[in-house]
Structures are given as structure tokens and as C-alpha cells.
Image (tube, rainbow over all chains, first blue to last red; front, side, top):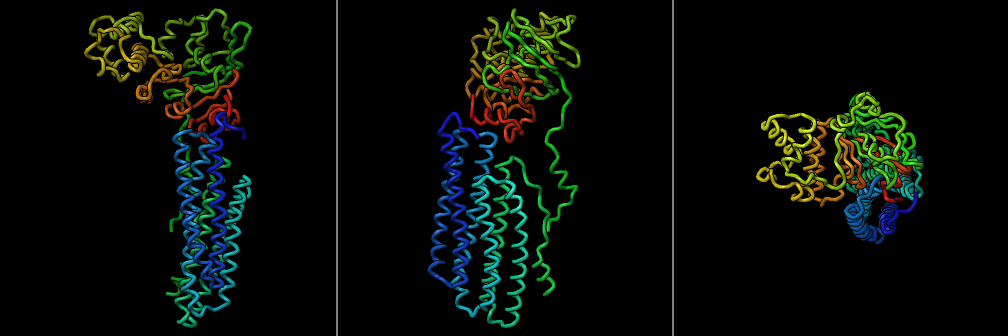
Length: 236
Length: 271
């Protein structure tokens, strides 16, 4: 794409793009750090994730302000308009990822106190790796302007959902085995749910990024039945 | 759980605009000014009772095309028009066509407001008088009032209808010119940058008026303001170097145009 006749317009768009990339990198780092803190009961690391969230919030506010100012000043059209509106939406999804990572970090202390079955760490770790791969992937495809890869990435979210269902079942089993596990397992369940939600936000970002790049919307995804609901009903 | 059926999904994805019947059609329209060719075979359909915006950088041929639609180019000696332009299926360049009558059916509003140096009343009554559309004073009174009302000007000028039209503000003068154009009940109104000499408030009033007028008239507007084209039109045609580059629904043209030249022009990357 060529340059604008007004060069400061290009600089303003670039700045917004840079903020999205920064927020993307930060969301990946926060997701990684929060799950590491959870699996290793590392309270110091958890604290760092919690303080990183304020940076994330500040970046989102800056992006919003810059985007609103740009719309008012330049009245962007076509792909410029899509990229500004897309950036606002992606930033709000990235900010939510930051919140969810912070929430995982906040639970580190509570989980650490209980006698957590160590084998649990393994399935949450596997889920976290999947989620992390998605977060890093969406940022990379956005930076490289690769819409085709985003289509594939969106479909990958299903793996996280499957993994979440198996973590859910596993935690249920531990709680039934020994009621003393209930407190820590409940916290872990929330953590797993947070990871699954992060995956959903990645899906949103992928859809927005695809629209920014191509101008067309990805087809509506079939709503999937949440299997944990079936399990819950069957158990009651 | 909210399960969407296929039918419900299809329904929400229906296109926003249904295609309208075409009021005017340009077929392979070429224009030469002496040696210089200004239009290179333009094919364009103007849909009925919609607003079509013509956009493009200066010298791209959009005004030339607009002026072909009511044979305004006839007034330029060195201008030659080729191809054909149909109004309701009838070629307007047919020798049997009465140009005066044609221009009553296809009216025009220009860039700068150009009221006659006569009273407000006479400015509007002039067209119906020369076309013999009214005879009695009561008939003239009625056509003047309704035209001024349709142009959104009547309440501002009803107490000074016999004062000169040139004494009005720029925005009022432009609306007076629109009232003058609609006084002869045209079918199509051509507008060549009608707001470029107006302030934002007068511009907003004219745009509001354009939106109301499309209930009854087919409107073709040339504008240099992208925002204006996006606001007032249902379809947009992009011209460049005498060619029609792309034509389509306005919301698509301004969010996701197909042609790179359109993309570059509307985003401010050339021109």
C-alpha cells in the first residue's frame, strides 16, 4: 500500500499499529507468566503479572484516544477506516486477555496453599501451551498481514475447548476423591476457564484482523455445545 | 444455547440495497474537446430515485459526464459527444429531441449559486413561465410556494418573496437554485459540487434536502468531498483519467472498494 499524501497520517496509523503489536506481545507474556506462576506457585511472578495489567490498561486507553483523534482529524476511508476501527476492537480483546491473565495470577496464592495433585499441573500446562500458541500466533499473523493463516488459527480454538473439557472432568474426579481438594481445584477450574476465555478472545482478534486485511467478514461459526454443561447436568 | 438456523443466518446476510430500475443509461460515452479526448467509453447506469455520486480527482471527466446527461456540453462549440445516453430508454442525443424540454426533465444545480438578478419569487416562477406550466397568478403562487417548501427555504423567505434573490446568503441562494430547478418538475436533478461554496451548516441543510428530494427525483451529484459522497449517495461511481474505474453501492465503495485506484483516491494516497 502506497503512502498518504499527508505523511503525518501514515505516522498516526503506524503508531496505532505499534500499540496493537505491543499489547499483543504483552498479552502473550502475561499469559505465559501467569500460568508459570500457577504451576510453580511463584508468588513474585504472579505479582508481576498483576502489575503488568496496569501497563496493558494504559496502552489500551492510549490507543483508544489516538484512534478517536485520528477519526476526528482524518476521516479515514476504506482500509484506513477498517484498520482504525479494527484496532479499537482488537485492543479491547487484548485488554480482556490481560485481565484474565491477571485473574489467574491472583489465584496463585490460594491454589498454592492447598495440597494440589501434581499430575493436574500437567493437563493445565498442556492447555496453557495451546492457548499461548494461539495468542502468539494471532499477533504474528497480524504483524505479517497473513489473513489465510488467521482462518486456520480460528479453527484451532476447538482444541482448547476439548482440552478444557478434559481438565474440567479431571478436576471433578479429584474433588470427588477427596473433598479437601475442593478449594484448590475450584481455583484451578477458574484458571482453566480463564484460559479457555483467552482462546475465545484470540478468535475475536483473528476475525477482526481478517476483516482489517481483507474487508470481508469470516463466515459465522456454528455455535458449539459446551460439553461441560452436559457433564454438569448428568452429574446433578 | 442460541442455535442459529441456516435460514436465519441467510436472512441477516441479505444485501442492504436492492437494485433499482435505471433512469438514465450511458453507453460507450466518449467526449472530445477539440483534439483532446476527455471521456473514453463510459458505461454507467443511473438508478431511479436514488442519489448517485460521481467522484474522482480533478480532470477525471466526472463533470464532463454529468454535463452530457442534459446536453450542457452542446453549449461548448468544440465539444463532441459519442456513444449514447438514454433517458427512460430514449436517446437524448436523437435529433428529434427538444433540448429545452430535455433540460426541463433533467435539471441542473451548479457549483456557485447563480440566482437570476430578479426577485426570489421570479427566480422560481421563471421556469414554469417559459415552459408554459402555469398561467394564472394563483397557479404561479402555488408552484413558487411548493418549490420553496420542497427546497426547505419557504419559511426563511416567505415575508420577502419580492426582494432580490441575490440578497440571500450563499446557502439560501443555493437552495433557491434548487427550488428553481424543481419548479419545472424535473425527473432528474444534476448537481455539480453544490456545496463547495457553502459553510458547514448550509452544507448540512443542502445534504438534508438531497436526502428528501430522492423520494421524488433521481439525483446525480459530483463532489470532491468523500464524506459528502458517503453521506448522501446510495451508489458511487469513481472516475479517473476519463475512464469509469468502478461503480457500486456507496457503503462498499467507502469501506472495501475493489479497484486500487479507488482505494488510493478515497484514502488520500494520490490526487
